[in-house]
Image (tube, rainbow over all chains, first blue to last red; front, top):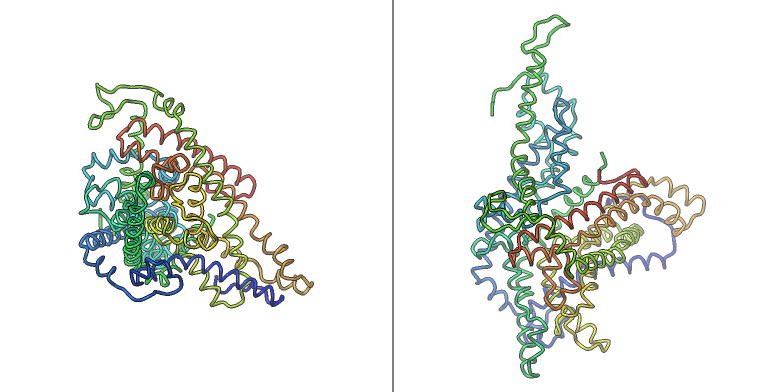
Length: 302
Length: 323
């Protein structure tokens, strides 16, 4: 993508300037809200409260960070998220690469049935309540299994891996089979070592997916002990908001008081947003190209 | 699972009549047992978490009590009662209207933006700058919905960034997320902000696949930038745009309820409630299991029908589709 030869080489300078301005505008729109969060979290609380922080931090204050990083629940939820992400990622790689392998073999009988079996859940599902009842019946409710196991298989990723495996080629496999290699061996010694790119894509998709997921945990994990980072964030960022009804009956002074509280509260929020997103921001430049690759693979038409 | 390698092809050394180690039939069966054993881990999870809940759908036609079996002596069958209740309630119309409104707004603002963005960046000469803007634009896609919603909520507060900026134009501070009339717009802005960059990847890759010699010859013929864009670039994107648009129409009821659940509140239910948020509230929070299952089933049938029609249409029009 970087080496797109189609950029147009002639044209007026004014058009160039306009395109650059537009591009800068897009970059600004995407980055500024996040930058704002960062500078506000670092500003002196009084400066932040005066609402004059726009371009760079006013004063310097890490008290917010000190407050947050001493919160045991943050680290507990961090630990849970890392655990879920790694466990799901490991299982996901096993299930998807294994299931994709026979789909690329000519010798497979019943391929139609298997394809159908994989296709149906992409369009139909039992819905939220039957899944909820199932998790309860299995005894997974309020345990990490409720998060890890359903997140350890993805039909969509199976299809992605299958497309990639196809590029490795049937001829290579046939040669190996004539040499007497079993399918297990071909899978482990031929397909897996040649699929590093797709394995990276699936691993990252799964890790990021688990890192950002919260709705499953909201339904299945009632206790803080097993809750992931996103639910911790939800408690702090979303639930601590007073809605309109509660505000309407307050006096002017109470409102002023509330506004102040809201501001210091906001600073805390910005701090926790930054802490929870930091791992993503730091690793993002390295992993984003794999996601782009994944999108392209996904759009490949058979 | 057997570890021993099976010579699948057998030691076939000569022409017909040579003795084979296994008959062809046995060979095929053995190889297939081996191949199907690869499917076991994925299939087990898919049966458990995708197919088993489908069986649970039968409670949509009962008055199900938590803890009782799906099919027992005491099962009360109620037929389509829950479906009819839902269709006659105010929620049916509300949810339909809200889903369609949010999806249409999302299409109206979110659909062309990735295309225009890709076209603009395509005109940027500095590769490094282009790469930077591109990479920056994907970033919101990776930030969790909870964080994005949290940012939106605090920006929309009376003391938040939005009111600070609008205050410069003399607009009085508002609690934007408590206003039902503003919810669809705010939802759309957040959604578009989060997705336009990532959605443009498809267009970038299509753009870079256009044959450069087309531009070359257009320039020789004296075509300027706009003419090249109009006669080469846009036609090159035509089919992908058509597919994306049709598929987006098919998914019109599939609103992103994650974001809705995070940013709505009782004050905005009337314009914010969509299928996912409604089933979560009445099902998980209020415990109306049978009714919720019926609602979910009904809406997924309607949604599937739309997707199906859209896909058929896309196949017919462009030759491409989901399947």
